[in-house]
Length: 583
Image (cartoon, rainbow, N blue to C red; front, side):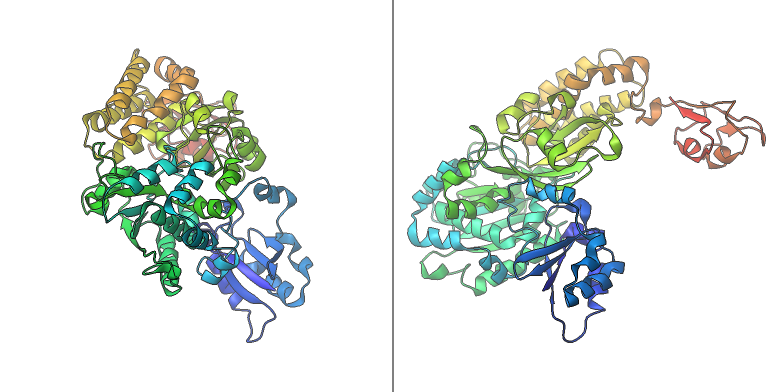
């Protein structure tokens, strides 16, 4: 038997390292089982997760494990009596989180040991590369990718084969294949999970791409905030070199190619490919004018191809199973599967991979289990801070590039932030504009100044200082920024504002004209009142008030001075009698 602990970043954050220490403390010199490690299986809401295996057969999946469960786990592994861990075994409902998915990019995540080349090879690893190097020409590889319909999973959805072909046909002896792992969307962690949990899959996919375009050097640009991903990728690169899967004359085929890692400083704009190239060259990350495109003149002025982690994570599967098998999944406009990071007010948060063509309802309610605490679904933010908010009435929207664009949102890299009835949509638009205004590189006026002006107007509205004409001014500015910005950051930054105005205009009007936040999320628009009949004069609220805005005698009703009240909500939370109401 094997005990396998999920030790991706989410598992470690939830306490997996403490679980490992507790199990190791109980081990003797000779045990009838081994202790192993794996990455993130995507069920982040159930971490820490421990799996019990017999060979490759999963016997039990144990969830929300604590160090106190270590003794039961060890005894179950020693005796084979799995009833000892019944209390922490996953439920049938939670198992549906995985069984309702179709996993290609994530097929090895949470299953194999990410630090073991042998584990990856046992799971058919590097078979796609061997097939390509021994039986296919670069042109045939590109044609297979074309048949698959694989589009770039980084956000724009540009056909992968077209970019590869453009780099292949560009003149130049030195060419570069670059992986964009600069995952900057708030709430997104797809790329991190793939690199942490299945780094050899990324290497194999990139090697196939390098062979196709004629590159001898590969670079993975990954943000420095992903230390575990970098550690696992460094180990995988070392193992691949030792196995002659990287370096000179790979597998004796005459193809030579090596890989290195560049840890980026974490600027959101470096997710744009030309800004990423600038950063790689040691310059400030700012977008270049196009054309020329990277395929003609990219890193070090040489032909370069850039795709993101998820794109490369599909390549080996396509080579092994054929482009037609990948194209059989999805819709006419969007082929294959897509990974989403499901976060926010959702019961089951984590990584989800589904075929294109499923609906938002399928993901949020079918896989994610619906909204926390019995609240009503209100909207979902698709495509990160540059995406759009899709309302409840469009919950049956099909997930593909064209259908999502029609709502005003974008596919993006795969962020899916769920909001419930208590979410202020004006505040949500401001939250994302705060981010994009801060992350603007400042190169072009429309983005540098336009996002700042949008941020200022939204701030004024949520502070109760909105005025007639602000909605129209927001719409005018959004159009100007979208039309005039140099790169994708500025061109899509207005999306949260435009979609929230489009679908939740009444909330903007309530903020501006009624000076009220319908969800009561905006502190400046709250008013607090003490109900005289309910107040017992216990003085608890007055003691909790940092502004000394509450006065009154013991055992007598208290009052709140609205001029002194800073709307921190501490008084209402402290009151045991429900005497303080918030409007």
